[in-house]
Length: 201
Image (cartoon, rainbow, N blue to C red; front, side, top):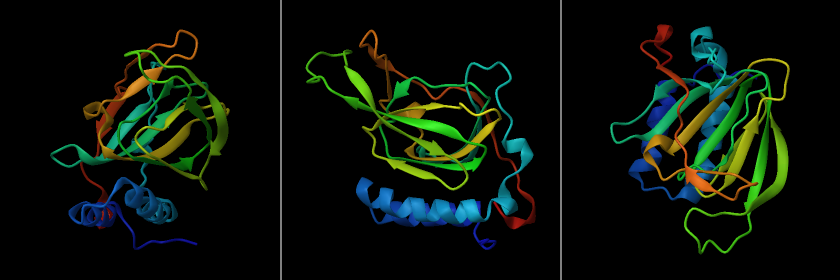
């Protein structure tokens, strides 16, 4: 099934409509995956090879910005990982929806087990895993902790939507061995869309 009528422009319009009506985090996590599913079905109309270029340095992902409001809300990215790339355990400080576009990677969930009484200290443990491929959508609240590992033999491409660009949230990474919790920026090799032909932006 293909949804050729859906586009980046329409996605942004629908996200703005939700924002205008002051949708709660719970409402966004319910509604946005449905919009993302339509983007996945229509990816042949908007996803370009130039959006899926990994970071050749291998230190972080290739990040292609599709949209971001002036206040850094409603941020939409295409994120590309090389085989073997892996993130530390981290949260986002905002709601997030991640969907597979090409290839696959593994999403690991983590659970925080300390009482949160000591600043910069956190105890975490693994709490399950799931595969993110071209049929998968993962939605998570701002305090959810996860990590991503491209344990496939090829490049993994995913669509990321955030309530706020995570470089402008109180986002953290977690070390399960040292129990250190520290600020964590998106980073990566970032580029952004300039034009998409055929009115599909």
